[in-house]
Image (cartoon, rainbow, N blue to C red; front, top):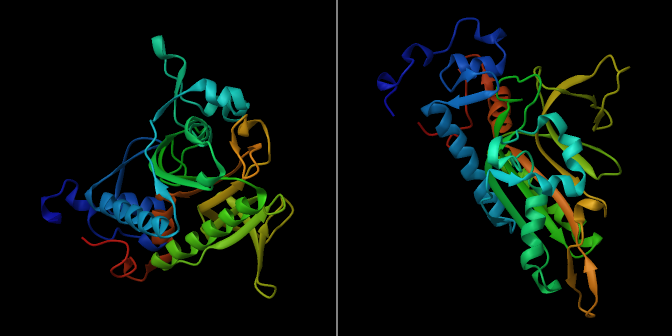
Length: 303
Protein backbone atom coordinates (compact mmCIF):
# COMPACT_ATOMS: atom_id res chain seq x y z
CA UNK A 1 0.00 0.00 0.00
CA UNK A 2 1.47 3.34 -1.08
CA UNK A 3 0.65 6.03 1.44
CA UNK A 4 1.41 8.74 -1.12
CA UNK A 5 -1.49 7.48 -3.22
CA UNK A 6 -4.03 7.54 -0.38
CA UNK A 7 -6.64 10.15 0.38
CA UNK A 8 -5.98 12.47 3.33
CA UNK A 9 -2.16 12.25 2.92
CA UNK A 10 -1.69 14.80 5.70
CA UNK A 11 -3.08 12.28 8.17
CA UNK A 12 -0.39 9.63 7.65
CA UNK A 13 2.00 11.10 10.18
CA UNK A 14 2.26 11.43 13.93
CA UNK A 15 0.15 14.46 14.88
CA UNK A 16 1.44 17.24 17.07
CA UNK A 17 0.68 16.89 20.76
CA UNK A 18 0.09 13.18 20.20
CA UNK A 19 1.17 12.29 23.73
CA UNK A 20 -1.82 14.11 25.21
CA UNK A 21 -4.21 13.04 22.43
CA UNK A 22 -6.84 10.46 23.36
CA UNK A 23 -6.37 7.16 21.58
CA UNK A 24 -9.53 7.30 19.50
CA UNK A 25 -8.59 10.81 18.36
CA UNK A 26 -5.06 9.64 17.61
CA UNK A 27 -6.46 6.92 15.35
CA UNK A 28 -8.59 9.50 13.56
CA UNK A 29 -5.78 12.04 13.19
CA UNK A 30 -3.35 9.36 11.98
CA UNK A 31 -5.57 8.22 9.11
CA UNK A 32 -6.92 4.94 10.47
CA UNK A 33 -10.55 5.99 10.77
CA UNK A 34 -12.82 8.79 9.61
CA UNK A 35 -16.20 9.79 11.05
CA UNK A 36 -18.65 11.05 8.40
CA UNK A 37 -21.30 11.05 11.15
CA UNK A 38 -21.02 10.69 14.91
CA UNK A 39 -21.20 7.04 15.88
CA UNK A 40 -20.54 5.66 12.39
CA UNK A 41 -16.82 4.98 11.84
CA UNK A 42 -15.42 4.69 8.34
CA UNK A 43 -12.18 2.71 8.34
CA UNK A 44 -9.62 3.98 5.84
CA UNK A 45 -7.28 1.47 4.10
CA UNK A 46 -4.64 1.32 6.83
CA UNK A 47 -7.30 1.03 9.54
CA UNK A 48 -9.14 -1.65 7.60
CA UNK A 49 -5.93 -3.68 7.35
CA UNK A 50 -5.62 -3.62 11.12
CA UNK A 51 -9.29 -4.61 11.53
CA UNK A 52 -8.92 -7.50 9.09
CA UNK A 53 -5.78 -8.73 10.84
CA UNK A 54 -7.55 -8.65 14.22
CA UNK A 55 -10.44 -10.63 12.73
CA UNK A 56 -8.10 -13.20 11.17
CA UNK A 57 -6.38 -13.77 14.53
CA UNK A 58 -9.73 -14.23 16.31
CA UNK A 59 -10.93 -16.59 13.58
CA UNK A 60 -7.79 -18.70 13.71
CA UNK A 61 -7.86 -19.02 17.50
CA UNK A 62 -11.63 -19.64 17.61
CA UNK A 63 -11.29 -22.56 15.22
CA UNK A 64 -8.54 -24.03 17.40
CA UNK A 65 -10.98 -23.97 20.33
CA UNK A 66 -13.77 -25.68 18.42
CA UNK A 67 -15.99 -22.75 17.40
CA UNK A 68 -17.67 -22.92 13.99
CA UNK A 69 -18.27 -19.72 12.04
CA UNK A 70 -21.67 -18.74 10.68
CA UNK A 71 -23.01 -15.54 9.17
CA UNK A 72 -26.36 -14.20 10.34
CA UNK A 73 -28.55 -11.61 8.61
CA UNK A 74 -28.06 -8.01 9.71
CA UNK A 75 -31.86 -7.71 9.75
CA UNK A 76 -33.97 -9.80 12.11
CA UNK A 77 -37.61 -10.06 13.09
CA UNK A 78 -38.39 -7.96 16.14
CA UNK A 79 -40.66 -10.72 17.48
CA UNK A 80 -37.61 -12.77 18.47
CA UNK A 81 -36.60 -10.15 21.04
CA UNK A 82 -40.20 -9.47 22.00
CA UNK A 83 -40.85 -13.15 22.77
CA UNK A 84 -37.97 -13.27 25.23
CA UNK A 85 -38.75 -9.87 26.77
CA UNK A 86 -35.44 -8.38 25.72
CA UNK A 87 -37.00 -5.84 23.34
CA UNK A 88 -37.78 -3.84 26.49
CA UNK A 89 -34.17 -4.11 27.67
CA UNK A 90 -32.76 -2.63 24.48
CA UNK A 91 -35.77 -0.34 24.12
CA UNK A 92 -34.80 2.92 22.38
CA UNK A 93 -31.45 1.52 21.24
CA UNK A 94 -33.16 -0.58 18.56
CA UNK A 95 -33.06 0.61 14.94
CA UNK A 96 -36.47 -0.25 13.50
CA UNK A 97 -37.20 -0.46 9.81
CA UNK A 98 -40.14 1.67 8.69
CA UNK A 99 -42.81 1.09 6.06
CA UNK A 100 -43.87 -2.37 4.95
CA UNK A 101 -40.91 -3.90 6.80
CA UNK A 102 -41.75 -2.51 10.24
CA UNK A 103 -41.65 -5.98 11.81
CA UNK A 104 -37.88 -6.02 11.26
CA UNK A 105 -35.00 -4.42 13.16
CA UNK A 106 -31.29 -4.03 12.52
CA UNK A 107 -29.37 -6.59 14.54
CA UNK A 108 -28.55 -5.28 18.02
CA UNK A 109 -27.85 -8.69 19.55
CA UNK A 110 -28.02 -12.24 18.23
CA UNK A 111 -28.68 -14.73 21.04
CA UNK A 112 -32.29 -15.17 19.97
CA UNK A 113 -31.28 -15.71 16.34
CA UNK A 114 -28.72 -18.35 17.34
CA UNK A 115 -31.36 -20.09 19.45
CA UNK A 116 -33.97 -19.90 16.70
CA UNK A 117 -31.46 -21.52 14.37
CA UNK A 118 -30.74 -24.25 16.92
CA UNK A 119 -34.45 -24.93 17.40
CA UNK A 120 -34.71 -25.85 13.72
CA UNK A 121 -31.91 -28.39 13.71
CA UNK A 122 -31.27 -29.63 17.25
CA UNK A 123 -32.54 -33.16 17.88
CA UNK A 124 -30.15 -35.24 19.94
CA UNK A 125 -27.67 -34.85 22.79
CA UNK A 126 -25.07 -36.11 20.30
CA UNK A 127 -25.15 -32.68 18.61
CA UNK A 128 -24.23 -30.84 21.81
CA UNK A 129 -22.45 -28.71 22.69
CA UNK A 130 -22.94 -26.33 19.78
CA UNK A 131 -20.34 -23.54 19.70
CA UNK A 132 -20.87 -20.92 17.03
CA UNK A 133 -19.50 -17.48 16.27
CA UNK A 134 -19.82 -14.78 13.68
CA UNK A 135 -18.03 -11.53 12.90
CA UNK A 136 -20.44 -8.90 11.65
CA UNK A 137 -21.84 -5.45 12.28
CA UNK A 138 -24.29 -4.63 15.04
CA UNK A 139 -26.46 -1.57 15.39
CA UNK A 140 -27.49 0.22 18.58
CA UNK A 141 -28.82 3.76 18.84
CA UNK A 142 -26.67 4.71 21.83
CA UNK A 143 -27.15 8.20 23.22
CA UNK A 144 -23.53 9.27 23.54
CA UNK A 145 -21.37 7.85 20.80
CA UNK A 146 -17.62 8.08 21.39
CA UNK A 147 -15.04 7.25 18.76
CA UNK A 148 -14.67 3.55 18.02
CA UNK A 149 -15.25 2.56 21.65
CA UNK A 150 -18.95 3.36 21.67
CA UNK A 151 -20.44 3.67 18.20
CA UNK A 152 -23.89 3.12 16.77
CA UNK A 153 -22.61 0.73 14.12
CA UNK A 154 -19.83 -1.53 15.36
CA UNK A 155 -18.04 -4.70 14.37
CA UNK A 156 -18.44 -7.57 16.81
CA UNK A 157 -17.40 -11.18 17.10
CA UNK A 158 -20.39 -12.62 18.91
CA UNK A 159 -20.38 -16.22 20.04
CA UNK A 160 -22.68 -18.68 21.77
CA UNK A 161 -22.48 -22.09 23.33
CA UNK A 162 -25.59 -24.22 23.49
CA UNK A 163 -25.01 -26.92 26.07
CA UNK A 164 -26.77 -30.01 27.34
CA UNK A 165 -26.27 -29.30 31.04
CA UNK A 166 -24.79 -26.83 33.50
CA UNK A 167 -21.43 -28.61 33.71
CA UNK A 168 -21.03 -28.39 29.95
CA UNK A 169 -22.02 -24.73 30.07
CA UNK A 170 -19.28 -23.87 32.56
CA UNK A 171 -16.81 -25.89 30.52
CA UNK A 172 -17.71 -23.72 27.53
CA UNK A 173 -17.15 -20.62 29.65
CA UNK A 174 -13.69 -21.82 30.67
CA UNK A 175 -12.93 -22.61 27.05
CA UNK A 176 -13.80 -19.05 26.09
CA UNK A 177 -11.48 -17.71 28.78
CA UNK A 178 -8.61 -19.72 27.29
CA UNK A 179 -9.59 -18.29 23.90
CA UNK A 180 -9.48 -14.71 25.23
CA UNK A 181 -5.99 -15.16 26.65
CA UNK A 182 -4.78 -16.87 23.45
CA UNK A 183 -6.08 -13.97 21.33
CA UNK A 184 -4.67 -11.35 23.69
CA UNK A 185 -1.30 -13.12 23.61
CA UNK A 186 -1.28 -12.52 19.86
CA UNK A 187 -2.09 -8.86 20.54
CA UNK A 188 0.64 -8.73 23.20
CA UNK A 189 -1.92 -7.54 25.76
CA UNK A 190 -2.75 -8.65 29.29
CA UNK A 191 -6.44 -8.11 30.06
CA UNK A 192 -7.85 -7.77 33.56
CA UNK A 193 -10.62 -10.21 34.45
CA UNK A 194 -13.57 -8.81 36.42
CA UNK A 195 -16.74 -10.69 37.30
CA UNK A 196 -20.10 -10.30 39.02
CA UNK A 197 -23.30 -12.29 39.62
CA UNK A 198 -21.40 -15.34 40.90
CA UNK A 199 -19.14 -15.48 37.84
CA UNK A 200 -22.10 -15.46 35.46
CA UNK A 201 -20.96 -12.16 33.96
CA UNK A 202 -17.26 -11.67 33.19
CA UNK A 203 -15.47 -8.74 31.56
CA UNK A 204 -11.96 -8.72 30.15
CA UNK A 205 -10.70 -5.16 30.43
CA UNK A 206 -7.79 -2.95 29.43
CA UNK A 207 -7.04 0.17 31.53
CA UNK A 208 -7.93 3.17 29.41
CA UNK A 209 -8.60 6.82 30.24
CA UNK A 210 -11.46 6.87 27.75
CA UNK A 211 -13.05 3.70 29.11
CA UNK A 212 -16.52 3.63 30.60
CA UNK A 213 -15.96 0.84 33.17
CA UNK A 214 -14.45 1.85 36.51
CA UNK A 215 -12.49 -0.81 38.37
CA UNK A 216 -10.36 -1.18 41.46
CA UNK A 217 -6.97 -2.84 41.05
CA UNK A 218 -5.43 -4.37 44.16
CA UNK A 219 -1.82 -5.04 43.19
CA UNK A 220 -0.92 -6.73 46.47
CA UNK A 221 -3.86 -9.13 46.35
CA UNK A 222 -3.64 -9.49 42.57
CA UNK A 223 -7.36 -8.85 42.42
CA UNK A 224 -9.53 -6.63 40.25
CA UNK A 225 -13.13 -5.67 41.01
CA UNK A 226 -15.81 -3.33 39.75
CA UNK A 227 -15.66 0.06 41.45
CA UNK A 228 -18.60 1.63 43.26
CA UNK A 229 -19.61 5.28 43.23
CA UNK A 230 -17.71 5.79 46.49
CA UNK A 231 -14.37 4.50 45.20
CA UNK A 232 -12.07 7.50 44.78
CA UNK A 233 -9.05 5.62 43.43
CA UNK A 234 -10.78 3.70 40.68
CA UNK A 235 -9.27 3.20 37.24
CA UNK A 236 -11.07 3.73 33.95
CA UNK A 237 -11.02 0.72 31.66
CA UNK A 238 -12.50 -0.51 28.41
CA UNK A 239 -13.92 -3.96 27.75
CA UNK A 240 -12.51 -5.97 24.85
CA UNK A 241 -14.26 -9.27 25.54
CA UNK A 242 -16.99 -10.65 27.79
CA UNK A 243 -19.24 -13.57 28.51
CA UNK A 244 -22.66 -13.92 30.08
CA UNK A 245 -24.18 -17.13 31.42
CA UNK A 246 -27.94 -17.16 30.98
CA UNK A 247 -30.13 -18.68 33.65
CA UNK A 248 -32.90 -20.99 32.55
CA UNK A 249 -35.09 -18.01 31.71
CA UNK A 250 -37.54 -17.15 28.98
CA UNK A 251 -34.74 -16.56 26.50
CA UNK A 252 -34.15 -20.32 26.35
CA UNK A 253 -37.80 -20.75 25.41
CA UNK A 254 -38.85 -24.32 24.62
CA UNK A 255 -35.71 -25.47 22.87
CA UNK A 256 -35.10 -29.07 23.85
CA UNK A 257 -33.18 -32.14 22.80
CA UNK A 258 -33.52 -35.87 23.34
CA UNK A 259 -31.18 -36.96 26.09
CA UNK A 260 -29.31 -40.25 26.31
CA UNK A 261 -32.19 -41.71 28.34
CA UNK A 262 -34.70 -40.64 25.63
CA UNK A 263 -36.20 -37.79 27.68
CA UNK A 264 -36.67 -34.26 26.37
CA UNK A 265 -34.46 -31.73 28.17
CA UNK A 266 -33.92 -28.00 27.81
CA UNK A 267 -30.61 -26.56 26.68
CA UNK A 268 -28.31 -24.14 28.50
CA UNK A 269 -26.99 -20.97 26.86
CA UNK A 270 -23.80 -18.96 27.16
CA UNK A 271 -23.11 -15.73 25.27
CA UNK A 272 -19.57 -14.58 24.53
CA UNK A 273 -17.84 -12.01 22.37
CA UNK A 274 -15.01 -9.75 21.27
CA UNK A 275 -15.47 -6.11 20.36
CA UNK A 276 -13.34 -5.82 17.21
CA UNK A 277 -13.09 -2.03 17.28
CA UNK A 278 -12.44 -2.14 21.01
CA UNK A 279 -9.58 -4.58 20.39
CA UNK A 280 -8.08 -2.16 17.91
CA UNK A 281 -8.39 0.69 20.40
CA UNK A 282 -6.90 -1.42 23.20
CA UNK A 283 -3.93 -2.50 21.07
CA UNK A 284 -3.07 1.12 20.28
CA UNK A 285 -3.72 2.17 23.89
CA UNK A 286 -1.37 -0.55 25.11
CA UNK A 287 1.38 -0.08 22.55
CA UNK A 288 1.71 3.67 22.25
CA UNK A 289 5.31 4.68 22.87
CA UNK A 290 7.53 7.74 22.54
CA UNK A 291 7.41 7.50 18.74
CA UNK A 292 3.64 7.22 18.46
CA UNK A 293 1.75 4.02 17.61
CA UNK A 294 3.80 0.82 17.73
CA UNK A 295 1.85 -2.30 16.78
CA UNK A 296 3.00 -5.74 18.01
CA UNK A 297 5.59 -6.80 15.45
CA UNK A 298 4.40 -9.26 12.78
CA UNK A 299 1.14 -9.86 14.62
CA UNK A 300 -1.53 -7.25 14.14
CA UNK A 301 -0.65 -5.22 11.08
CA UNK A 302 1.38 -5.64 7.93
CA UNK A 303 1.28 -2.58 5.68
